[in-house]
Length: 345
Figure 1 (cartoon, helix red, strand yellow):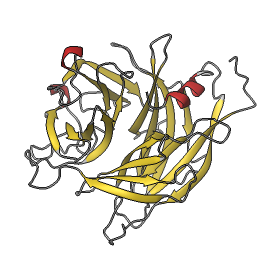
Figure 2 (figure 1 turned 90 degrees about the vertical axis):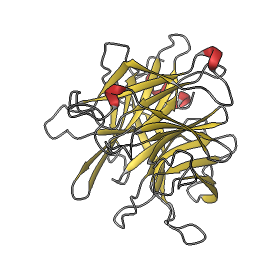
Figure 3 (figure 1 turned 60 degrees about the vertical axis):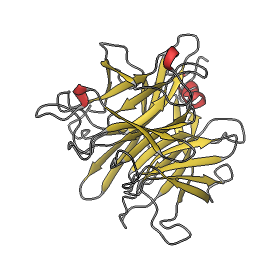
Protein backbone atom coordinates (compact mmCIF):
# COMPACT_ATOMS: atom_id res chain seq x y z
CA UNK A 1 0.00 0.00 0.00
CA UNK A 2 1.48 3.42 -0.95
CA UNK A 3 2.82 5.40 1.97
CA UNK A 4 3.67 2.33 4.05
CA UNK A 5 7.27 3.22 4.90
CA UNK A 6 6.60 6.85 5.79
CA UNK A 7 3.50 6.23 7.88
CA UNK A 8 5.07 3.24 9.63
CA UNK A 9 8.06 5.32 10.67
CA UNK A 10 5.89 8.14 11.99
CA UNK A 11 3.37 5.91 13.73
CA UNK A 12 6.10 3.97 15.50
CA UNK A 13 6.41 6.85 17.95
CA UNK A 14 2.96 8.41 17.83
CA UNK A 15 2.71 7.88 21.57
CA UNK A 16 5.62 10.29 21.92
CA UNK A 17 4.14 13.58 20.72
CA UNK A 18 6.08 15.38 17.97
CA UNK A 19 8.92 12.83 18.08
CA UNK A 20 9.34 13.22 14.33
CA UNK A 21 9.66 16.32 12.23
CA UNK A 22 10.28 16.99 8.56
CA UNK A 23 13.28 18.24 6.65
CA UNK A 24 13.01 19.80 3.20
CA UNK A 25 15.64 18.04 1.08
CA UNK A 26 14.98 20.08 -2.05
CA UNK A 27 12.34 22.12 -3.82
CA UNK A 28 12.26 22.87 -7.53
CA UNK A 29 10.07 24.71 -10.04
CA UNK A 30 8.69 22.71 -12.96
CA UNK A 31 8.32 24.29 -16.43
CA UNK A 32 5.16 26.15 -17.44
CA UNK A 33 5.39 25.00 -21.06
CA UNK A 34 6.14 21.74 -22.84
CA UNK A 35 8.57 21.33 -25.73
CA UNK A 36 5.97 22.58 -28.23
CA UNK A 37 5.24 25.72 -26.21
CA UNK A 38 1.84 24.66 -24.88
CA UNK A 39 0.97 25.56 -21.29
CA UNK A 40 1.36 22.82 -18.71
CA UNK A 41 0.66 22.87 -15.01
CA UNK A 42 -2.33 22.69 -12.74
CA UNK A 43 -0.75 19.65 -11.11
CA UNK A 44 -3.25 18.28 -8.62
CA UNK A 45 -1.98 14.77 -7.83
CA UNK A 46 1.23 12.73 -7.96
CA UNK A 47 2.25 9.06 -7.94
CA UNK A 48 5.87 7.90 -7.86
CA UNK A 49 7.18 4.51 -9.03
CA UNK A 50 10.50 4.00 -7.24
CA UNK A 51 11.43 0.87 -9.21
CA UNK A 52 11.42 2.76 -12.52
CA UNK A 53 12.09 6.26 -11.15
CA UNK A 54 8.93 7.53 -12.84
CA UNK A 55 6.72 10.30 -11.49
CA UNK A 56 3.15 10.61 -12.79
CA UNK A 57 1.48 14.01 -12.43
CA UNK A 58 -2.21 14.70 -13.01
CA UNK A 59 -3.20 18.09 -14.42
CA UNK A 60 -6.62 19.57 -13.63
CA UNK A 61 -6.54 21.99 -16.57
CA UNK A 62 -9.40 21.79 -19.09
CA UNK A 63 -7.25 19.53 -21.29
CA UNK A 64 -6.74 16.87 -18.62
CA UNK A 65 -3.30 15.25 -18.91
CA UNK A 66 -1.40 12.55 -17.07
CA UNK A 67 2.30 13.30 -17.58
CA UNK A 68 5.32 11.15 -16.75
CA UNK A 69 8.68 12.50 -15.55
CA UNK A 70 12.07 10.94 -14.77
CA UNK A 71 15.06 11.96 -12.67
CA UNK A 72 13.37 12.27 -9.29
CA UNK A 73 15.90 9.98 -7.62
CA UNK A 74 18.69 12.30 -8.80
CA UNK A 75 16.56 15.46 -8.27
CA UNK A 76 15.80 18.17 -8.40
CA UNK A 77 16.40 18.38 -12.20
CA UNK A 78 13.47 16.42 -13.68
CA UNK A 79 12.94 15.45 -17.31
CA UNK A 80 9.46 15.26 -18.89
CA UNK A 81 9.02 11.99 -20.80
CA UNK A 82 5.50 11.92 -22.25
CA UNK A 83 1.88 12.81 -21.49
CA UNK A 84 -1.52 11.28 -22.19
CA UNK A 85 -4.85 13.06 -22.58
CA UNK A 86 -7.64 11.69 -20.39
CA UNK A 87 -11.12 11.41 -21.96
CA UNK A 88 -11.54 15.05 -22.95
CA UNK A 89 -13.63 16.62 -25.70
CA UNK A 90 -16.71 15.39 -27.60
CA UNK A 91 -15.05 12.09 -28.53
CA UNK A 92 -15.77 10.81 -25.01
CA UNK A 93 -18.91 8.68 -25.09
CA UNK A 94 -20.21 10.46 -21.97
CA UNK A 95 -18.94 13.91 -22.93
CA UNK A 96 -17.87 14.34 -19.29
CA UNK A 97 -16.25 17.62 -18.24
CA UNK A 98 -13.36 16.43 -16.09
CA UNK A 99 -11.73 18.33 -13.25
CA UNK A 100 -9.13 15.76 -12.25
CA UNK A 101 -8.03 16.06 -8.63
CA UNK A 102 -6.73 12.60 -7.72
CA UNK A 103 -6.04 9.25 -9.33
CA UNK A 104 -5.17 5.61 -8.64
CA UNK A 105 -3.73 3.19 -11.21
CA UNK A 106 -4.83 -0.38 -10.47
CA UNK A 107 -5.79 -3.51 -12.41
CA UNK A 108 -4.96 -1.87 -15.75
CA UNK A 109 -7.32 1.01 -14.99
CA UNK A 110 -7.03 4.64 -14.01
CA UNK A 111 -9.51 5.60 -11.31
CA UNK A 112 -10.02 9.37 -11.29
CA UNK A 113 -11.74 11.65 -8.78
CA UNK A 114 -13.38 14.48 -10.73
CA UNK A 115 -14.32 17.59 -8.75
CA UNK A 116 -17.82 19.03 -9.11
CA UNK A 117 -19.50 22.43 -9.32
CA UNK A 118 -22.95 21.59 -7.89
CA UNK A 119 -24.41 21.55 -11.41
CA UNK A 120 -25.69 18.92 -13.84
CA UNK A 121 -22.95 19.67 -16.38
CA UNK A 122 -20.14 19.51 -13.77
CA UNK A 123 -21.01 16.72 -11.34
CA UNK A 124 -18.54 15.27 -8.87
CA UNK A 125 -17.80 11.71 -10.00
CA UNK A 126 -15.55 8.68 -9.84
CA UNK A 127 -14.30 7.91 -13.35
CA UNK A 128 -12.84 4.67 -14.66
CA UNK A 129 -10.42 4.97 -17.59
CA UNK A 130 -8.16 2.63 -19.56
CA UNK A 131 -4.57 2.95 -18.29
CA UNK A 132 -3.02 2.46 -21.74
CA UNK A 133 -5.16 4.93 -23.71
CA UNK A 134 -6.88 7.21 -21.21
CA UNK A 135 -10.26 6.34 -22.75
CA UNK A 136 -13.26 6.74 -20.47
CA UNK A 137 -14.86 3.40 -19.54
CA UNK A 138 -17.38 4.36 -16.89
CA UNK A 139 -18.62 7.39 -14.93
CA UNK A 140 -19.99 6.74 -11.44
CA UNK A 141 -22.14 9.11 -9.42
CA UNK A 142 -21.40 9.79 -5.76
CA UNK A 143 -23.95 8.65 -3.14
CA UNK A 144 -26.97 10.85 -2.24
CA UNK A 145 -25.38 12.49 0.82
CA UNK A 146 -22.65 13.87 -1.44
CA UNK A 147 -25.05 15.17 -4.09
CA UNK A 148 -26.01 18.88 -4.18
CA UNK A 149 -29.19 19.89 -2.37
CA UNK A 150 -30.24 23.18 -0.72
CA UNK A 151 -28.86 22.04 2.64
CA UNK A 152 -26.45 19.25 1.76
CA UNK A 153 -23.79 17.80 -0.48
CA UNK A 154 -20.36 18.90 -1.59
CA UNK A 155 -19.71 22.59 -1.91
CA UNK A 156 -18.74 23.80 -5.37
CA UNK A 157 -15.05 23.23 -6.16
CA UNK A 158 -14.57 21.43 -2.83
CA UNK A 159 -14.04 17.85 -3.87
CA UNK A 160 -13.66 15.01 -4.17
CA UNK A 161 -10.03 16.00 -3.73
CA UNK A 162 -8.22 12.77 -2.84
CA UNK A 163 -8.39 9.14 -3.95
CA UNK A 164 -6.20 6.32 -2.62
CA UNK A 165 -6.12 2.53 -2.79
CA UNK A 166 -6.93 0.73 0.49
CA UNK A 167 -6.75 -2.96 -0.40
CA UNK A 168 -3.65 -5.10 -0.03
CA UNK A 169 -2.15 -6.75 -3.17
CA UNK A 170 -4.29 -9.63 -4.43
CA UNK A 171 -7.37 -8.44 -2.53
CA UNK A 172 -10.56 -6.99 -4.08
CA UNK A 173 -10.21 -3.38 -5.10
CA UNK A 174 -11.02 -0.78 -2.43
CA UNK A 175 -10.68 2.95 -2.94
CA UNK A 176 -10.95 5.71 -0.35
CA UNK A 177 -12.18 9.10 -1.52
CA UNK A 178 -12.00 12.35 0.46
CA UNK A 179 -13.75 15.69 0.17
CA UNK A 180 -11.65 18.83 0.44
CA UNK A 181 -14.03 20.78 2.67
CA UNK A 182 -16.97 19.81 4.93
CA UNK A 183 -20.23 18.89 3.22
CA UNK A 184 -23.00 21.45 3.73
CA UNK A 185 -24.74 19.30 6.32
CA UNK A 186 -21.58 18.54 8.31
CA UNK A 187 -19.72 20.30 11.15
CA UNK A 188 -17.40 23.06 9.92
CA UNK A 189 -14.28 21.31 11.24
CA UNK A 190 -14.83 17.82 9.79
CA UNK A 191 -14.18 16.42 6.32
CA UNK A 192 -15.75 13.21 4.99
CA UNK A 193 -14.18 10.08 3.56
CA UNK A 194 -16.01 7.63 1.30
CA UNK A 195 -15.03 4.03 0.62
CA UNK A 196 -15.69 2.34 -2.72
CA UNK A 197 -15.39 -1.44 -3.02
CA UNK A 198 -15.87 -4.34 -5.40
CA UNK A 199 -16.96 -7.78 -4.23
CA UNK A 200 -14.48 -10.67 -4.73
CA UNK A 201 -16.67 -12.48 -7.29
CA UNK A 202 -16.98 -9.32 -9.39
CA UNK A 203 -13.41 -8.08 -9.04
CA UNK A 204 -12.52 -8.39 -12.73
CA UNK A 205 -9.15 -7.03 -13.78
CA UNK A 206 -10.59 -5.84 -17.07
CA UNK A 207 -13.83 -4.06 -16.31
CA UNK A 208 -15.13 -4.08 -12.72
CA UNK A 209 -18.90 -3.59 -12.58
CA UNK A 210 -20.68 -0.62 -11.06
CA UNK A 211 -19.00 0.12 -7.75
CA UNK A 212 -20.93 -0.03 -4.49
CA UNK A 213 -20.07 3.03 -2.40
CA UNK A 214 -20.51 2.47 1.29
CA UNK A 215 -22.99 5.26 1.82
CA UNK A 216 -23.27 4.56 5.55
CA UNK A 217 -19.51 4.60 5.97
CA UNK A 218 -19.09 8.38 5.90
CA UNK A 219 -15.88 8.58 7.92
CA UNK A 220 -14.97 12.03 9.30
CA UNK A 221 -11.55 13.51 10.02
CA UNK A 222 -11.11 16.52 12.27
CA UNK A 223 -9.52 19.53 10.55
CA UNK A 224 -7.36 21.97 12.55
CA UNK A 225 -9.60 24.33 14.52
CA UNK A 226 -7.99 24.90 17.90
CA UNK A 227 -7.96 28.69 17.56
CA UNK A 228 -10.39 31.18 15.94
CA UNK A 229 -7.58 32.04 13.51
CA UNK A 230 -7.09 28.37 12.68
CA UNK A 231 -10.12 28.00 10.38
CA UNK A 232 -10.53 27.36 6.70
CA UNK A 233 -8.33 24.26 6.28
CA UNK A 234 -9.02 21.77 3.51
CA UNK A 235 -7.70 18.29 2.72
CA UNK A 236 -5.88 18.02 -0.61
CA UNK A 237 -4.35 14.52 -0.57
CA UNK A 238 -3.78 11.34 1.46
CA UNK A 239 -1.33 8.47 1.82
CA UNK A 240 -2.35 5.24 3.55
CA UNK A 241 -0.65 2.47 5.52
CA UNK A 242 -2.21 -0.72 6.91
CA UNK A 243 -0.77 -2.25 10.07
CA UNK A 244 -0.46 -5.98 9.29
CA UNK A 245 -0.94 -7.03 12.93
CA UNK A 246 -3.81 -4.75 13.88
CA UNK A 247 -5.21 -4.34 10.36
CA UNK A 248 -5.63 -0.67 11.29
CA UNK A 249 -5.25 1.93 8.54
CA UNK A 250 -3.22 5.08 9.15
CA UNK A 251 -3.61 8.17 6.96
CA UNK A 252 -1.07 10.90 6.26
CA UNK A 253 -2.96 13.99 5.08
CA UNK A 254 -1.81 17.06 3.18
CA UNK A 255 -3.77 20.09 4.37
CA UNK A 256 -4.06 23.53 2.78
CA UNK A 257 -5.52 26.91 3.75
CA UNK A 258 -5.93 29.96 1.51
CA UNK A 259 -6.52 33.52 2.70
CA UNK A 260 -7.24 36.11 0.00
CA UNK A 261 -5.65 37.72 -1.86
CA UNK A 262 -2.58 35.42 -1.98
CA UNK A 263 -1.68 33.79 1.34
CA UNK A 264 -1.17 30.05 1.63
CA UNK A 265 -0.60 27.78 4.63
CA UNK A 266 0.33 24.10 4.40
CA UNK A 267 0.42 21.23 6.90
CA UNK A 268 0.83 17.48 7.17
CA UNK A 269 -1.26 15.55 9.70
CA UNK A 270 -1.31 11.90 10.77
CA UNK A 271 -4.65 10.15 11.44
CA UNK A 272 -6.05 6.74 12.24
CA UNK A 273 -8.74 5.77 9.75
CA UNK A 274 -11.92 6.38 11.77
CA UNK A 275 -14.25 3.53 12.54
CA UNK A 276 -18.02 3.89 12.00
CA UNK A 277 -19.53 6.31 14.47
CA UNK A 278 -16.22 7.91 15.41
CA UNK A 279 -14.29 11.02 14.42
CA UNK A 280 -10.53 10.77 13.94
CA UNK A 281 -8.39 13.52 15.42
CA UNK A 282 -4.79 14.19 14.32
CA UNK A 283 -2.17 12.07 16.08
CA UNK A 284 0.49 14.56 14.97
CA UNK A 285 0.56 17.70 12.82
CA UNK A 286 3.40 19.62 11.17
CA UNK A 287 3.60 23.19 9.84
CA UNK A 288 5.37 22.89 6.47
CA UNK A 289 6.30 26.58 6.29
CA UNK A 290 8.28 26.07 9.49
CA UNK A 291 10.66 23.77 7.59
CA UNK A 292 11.01 26.18 4.65
CA UNK A 293 8.43 24.92 2.17
CA UNK A 294 7.32 27.79 -0.07
CA UNK A 295 3.73 28.77 0.80
CA UNK A 296 1.68 27.77 -2.24
CA UNK A 297 -1.19 25.69 -3.55
CA UNK A 298 0.32 22.31 -2.61
CA UNK A 299 -2.15 19.63 -3.76
CA UNK A 300 -0.40 16.33 -4.48
CA UNK A 301 1.28 13.89 -2.08
CA UNK A 302 3.22 10.71 -2.88
CA UNK A 303 5.86 8.53 -1.34
CA UNK A 304 9.21 9.46 -2.88
CA UNK A 305 12.50 7.66 -3.59
CA UNK A 306 14.33 6.23 -0.58
CA UNK A 307 17.18 8.33 0.77
CA UNK A 308 20.80 7.19 0.56
CA UNK A 309 20.49 5.85 4.12
CA UNK A 310 17.31 3.94 3.19
CA UNK A 311 14.89 6.25 5.00
CA UNK A 312 11.58 7.02 3.28
CA UNK A 313 10.68 10.35 1.71
CA UNK A 314 7.64 12.30 0.55
CA UNK A 315 7.01 14.14 -2.71
CA UNK A 316 4.70 17.17 -2.78
CA UNK A 317 3.48 18.92 -5.93
CA UNK A 318 1.73 22.29 -6.28
CA UNK A 319 -0.93 23.55 -8.69
CA UNK A 320 -0.07 26.92 -10.26
CA UNK A 321 -3.65 27.60 -11.47
CA UNK A 322 -1.95 29.23 -14.51
CA UNK A 323 -1.43 32.18 -12.17
CA UNK A 324 1.81 34.19 -12.72
CA UNK A 325 2.04 34.70 -8.94
CA UNK A 326 2.27 30.93 -8.40
CA UNK A 327 4.42 28.13 -9.78
CA UNK A 328 4.42 24.42 -10.55
CA UNK A 329 6.56 23.24 -7.65
CA UNK A 330 7.87 19.85 -6.60
CA UNK A 331 9.42 19.24 -3.19
CA UNK A 332 11.09 16.29 -1.49
CA UNK A 333 10.69 15.92 2.29
CA UNK A 334 12.49 13.57 4.64
CA UNK A 335 11.26 12.64 8.14
CA UNK A 336 13.72 13.26 10.94
CA UNK A 337 13.72 12.15 14.54
CA UNK A 338 13.75 14.98 17.04
CA UNK A 339 16.36 14.48 19.75
CA UNK A 340 14.15 16.15 22.35
CA UNK A 341 11.79 13.17 22.35
CA UNK A 342 12.92 9.56 22.84
CA UNK A 343 11.10 6.77 21.02
CA UNK A 344 10.37 3.46 22.74
CA UNK A 345 10.73 1.57 19.46
